[in-house]
Image (tube, rainbow, N blue to C red):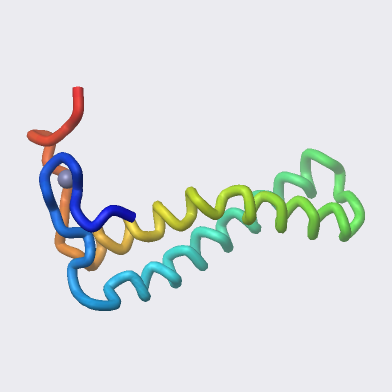
Length: 92
Ligand SMILES: [Zn+2]
């Protein structure tokens, strides 16, 4: 993660250890992924054996780790870092 925003120069690390809270955001997002994959398998694959659930859930969480990592930090910044989107800096 870069130290500053390349567009507006915003310093991402609002305070020391700020992103510890992002672990909880990431956990919450992972729970959503697990729930969605589980429910999808139950209804779309007609309740497959347990090993299918475990493999699919583990694979999807591992594959989505970069996404979850990034968006957990984005949510942390928006909820607790007192930042908001400014259309002035929107890339065309
Ligand atoms: Zn910026």
